Image: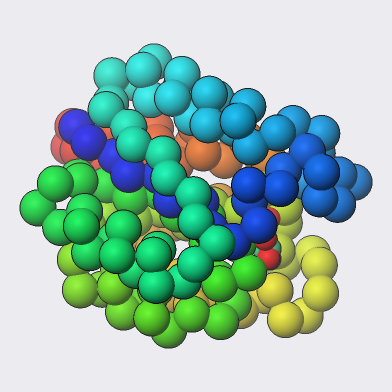
Length: 144
Ligand code: DQA
């Protein structure tokens, strides 16, 4: 099974940005963690990060016919991007939305997510473990 993990805007700043919210671990550590989780579950994973909305749209479009599942943390684009929502709808690949922080327990504007309008599941507030749970869900779903 092939899983594409997409991390969006500002996630490359993990370990530097708002450490009280996002923790001390770096983006490189997150990537390593995701790769090791995928290996444990026997899935092939590609982990990508971009600060550009259009690039994220292209990653999703390119996954068409290639990926069996998508895990996406779009960062702030979660709350603004109809384009990312439309791309996910277009490729119609099972998708899990992940957020490191609990977006429902923060500012009001973070409570709305365009990604949630398509994603099968949203996992938030579990830090890195949210990615593991997302991969586990997709692998389990594929097994049927
Ligand atoms: C985030 C939550 C978003 O509201 C925020 O803009 C981010 C990170 C998270 O992982 O908790 O950049 O997606």
